Every structure is written in structure tokens, then in C-alpha cells.
Amino acid sequence: MNKKIYMDYAGTTYLKKQVFEEMIPYFKEEFYNPSSMCNEASKVKMAIDESRKIIANFIGAKREEIFFTSGGTESDNFAIKGIALKNKNKGMHIITSKIEHHAVLNTCEDLVKNGFEVTYIPVDKKGIIDLNALKSSIQKDTILVSVMMANNEIGTIQPIREIGRICRKKGILFHTDAVQALGHIKIDVEDMNIDLLTMSAHKIYGPKGIGALYIRKGTKIENIIYGGPQERGKRGGTENPPAIVGFGKAVSLLKEKRMEKDINKIKRLRNRLLEGLKEIPKIKLNGVESENRLDNNINISFENVDGELLLMMLFSKGICVSSGSVCSAGSSNPSHVLLALGSDKKLAKATVRFTLGDRNTEEEIDYVIKSVWEIVNILRK
Ligand SMILES: *Cc1c(COP(=O)(O)O)cnc(C)c1O
Image (cartoon, rainbow, N blue to C red; front, side):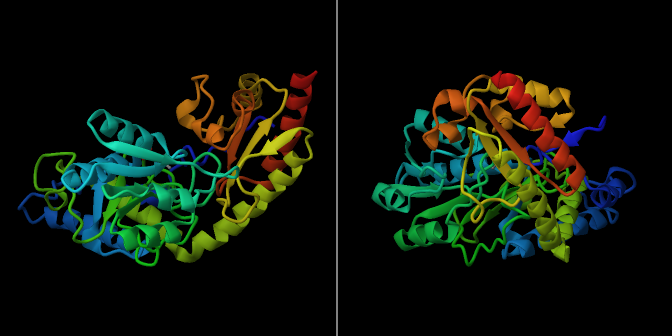
């Protein structure tokens, strides 16, 4: 097989053709600045508004609660820093988890440098948040809890509704990074008691460099990007109409019942891959078995195997996977997520993340199973 096999959909997805086609006019004839007074700009303005509506509907929010950003990273920064700065008179304590994306962890680190206090709640061996630890870490001066909806490395889905309920009861704002969850889990910000929610387009077959933050109406938040009056004065900078339109289209494609259909297909393929890989001796599946796990994720550690060599040999066979996390690829640091699960450093380094998407086939699955078996046998010799 000479073809390339892509199994790193949690890193990014390809751009769907229908999404790209929807974007094209806004690169070309509809180039107007949506803030312009001229008549021609109204079509651009309407297109942005339509995207906002689609995205809001998809998560049970109102149109005016959606703020476009440059992606998941900016949305996480906006949510956490924006709430921290606005509420520092009320308190300077923030709670998050040990397994968050670096967009959250490094934002929290920066706040610590500026006098805030951050508690990192632990997870159990499967990567699920300890709700009792969350409850007991709440202080009088806690202003924000930030816990991701689904983890990008091991795919564990957190008890978001319960976390939201705990926060609501205590009058603490609740932010969730839902970048990996979007399109995989049904999201309802009302039902889940969410005050702020991060989204990104390029993990759902949309363009890169565009995301959004849901901010519950009435939530006071400081700006992170100052500039013009765009995004109702909360996020300056000329809008990116093609990207916003593409984001909206990508979400609308998730809506067209495709979500369920694709999920079933991908889950079947994932389970086939898992069955094949589980037969390999001395391996460990990281995260939960199946329920509360993203439908497309497998994360496996291989004992007595050099993790870097394993990855290199998979690449040489045309198989694109990740070593647990894109951000830590290239650096030899073991994943903070796997360490939080109690994995030892050596095993954490010998870990591969397979994340599937709608272009994977059974033939690819079987080729990958065969290849991993071969490589692991060679490396263990
Ligand atoms: C990809 C990802 C991000 C970052 O989103 P970008 O749009 O790439 O900035 C944040 N959080 C999670 C969980 C992610 O998977």
C-alpha cells in the first residue's frame, strides 16, 4: 500500500469540499469589510450573522452569546484571562484539571505569575475528574472552574453536567474547552450549566485559524484583544468572513444527521482497530474502555518499545499518527496527561494516539493493525 493513511484527526482534519466552496465567494467578489457602510458589505455581514446563528443553535446558545476568535487557543485565553482579570476583586483563585490542553494550562501559569492561585484537580487512573476533589478545592475566593469536555489525548469525556451543577450552586463561573467534543457529543450549554465554551473549526473539517467562545449573556469579561468595535466590542480586529462562513458550514454539516451516521461508522472502525491492537501482548489502553470515550480515539502504550522509533517506523509505512499529543511531538517530554493517569515516564513515551475520521476505511484499519504488530515485534527483538 503506497497511500498515506491519516489517523491524526484530533490534531486537525482536512477541509471538507462543501465547506471550501462556501468560503470561496468571500475571498473573491464578497471581499467587503463587514463594518463598511456601503451596501455591498451587507451580504458579508449577513453571512457572518448566519454562521453565528448556526453555531449558537448547535450548542443551545443565543446568537449574541457567540464571539468569533482566531481559534481554540485564543478562546481558551479569552475565557480564562478575561474572567480572571474582570473578577480579581472578587477573588483570585481558579480551579482546573491536570489534563487540560496547553492553551488552558499555560494561560493559568501566566495568571499564577501575576498573583492568581490555581488548583489543578487530579484525575483517576482512567482520566476522569475527581468530583470530590473539585468540591473540596472550592474556596471563598474561587472565581472560575475550567475543565475540558473531552480530552485531546486519551479521549475521556468528563461529567460536565455535574461539574456545571456544582459550580452553579456555588456561584462560580464554569468554562469548558469543547474543541474535541464538538461534533462528537451533544452539547447544550443550558442543560450542562456552562458559562463559557471554547470551539475551533479545524477539528471539525472546517478551516484553521477560526474559533469561537460562547459567553453566557450577562457574564462580565475583560477583553483580551483590544481594537475596533467588532464582536460587540469584545474582540477587536476585522472579521475573517471566509473562515467564519466555513466554520458555520462545517457546523451545519455536523447537524445534518451526519453526526450520528459518521459517528457510528467511525466507532465501528475504531473498535475494529482496537480489537486488533489489543491482541498485542504487553500493551495498555490509556483512558476508559468505551463509554465516556470519544468515538474516534485510541491511545495505547507499548511496553519494552522505543516510542520514538515506533512512531518513525509508522511514518515510514505512510501511517500518520501522533505520540499522544501534537504539542509534545518533537520534544521528548512525556505527556502530562499520561503522567496524571499515573503512567511511568518510560511507558508514557512509548505511546501512540490513533484518531480516526470520516475518510478512514476498513482496509486502512487492517493495514495499520498489521503494521503495528510487525513494528512492535521488530522493536522488541
Ligand atoms: C486543538 C485544541 C485546541 C487549540 O485549538 P486551535 O484552534 O488549534 O488553537 C484547544 N483545546 C483542545 C482540547 C484542542 O484539541
